[in-house]
Image (cartoon, rainbow, N blue to C red; front, side):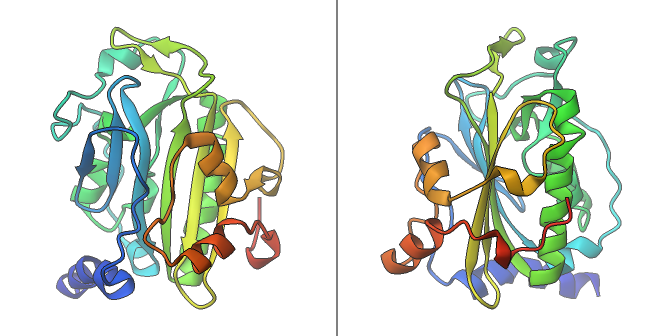
Length: 243
C-alpha cells in the first residue's frame, strides 16, 4: 500500500500536467527542488519568495509526526538563514509549505523544517488566521482531490529585518490555489502579517492582483485564454469557506 501511494505521488504531476510546468516565474537566481515542494530563494531577504507544490487527497492520510527539526537548508547554494536569526526576535518561524500538508512522508515532513521554508511571522498571525488558511486549504484538497499551491511573501514595504543575516520581515503574505480537478478554478489571498479576526473570505483577491504586488507570473505555461480567465476571477461562491 505504501509503495502504491509513493508511485501515485511521484507520477501524478506528470499525469496531470504533461509538459506544462506550473511553477511561477522567479525574480531570483536560485530555484531549489526538494522531494515534494520547490522554492525560489531570495538571498537578499534570506527566505523564499515562493514555495510551490501539489497537494492531493491521498497525501492527507499520512501519520508522520511533526518533528520541529528547524535547520538551515543544505540545498541553498548561497546559504540559507540560520537558527540564530530568529532567536529572541519576537517572530515565529512561519512555514510557507505547511508541515501539516506533508504528513504522508517522514522525509517530506522533515524537509518542511528547512529555514528556506520559513518566514518571520507575527505569532498571533502564524498561530491564528494563517493556521486557519492552511487548514482550509487542506479541506479543499480533500474535497477537490488535487490542488496546486503557491505560497510566499510580499517583500516590498517590509517590517524591517531580524538577525545577523538580516532576514526580511514581510508585511504581507499570499497564497495562490489552482484546483486541477473538475471545473478548473483559482483563488488567491493576501493577508497582512498581523493578528486578525476577520473571515478569510475578506482577504480573497485575484491571482492577477497578486502578480501586480509581487512582480511574478503565476502558471505561465497555461494557454493564455485559460490563464487570463482563471487569474482574473475571484468568485468565492465556487469555494467552501468555514473560517
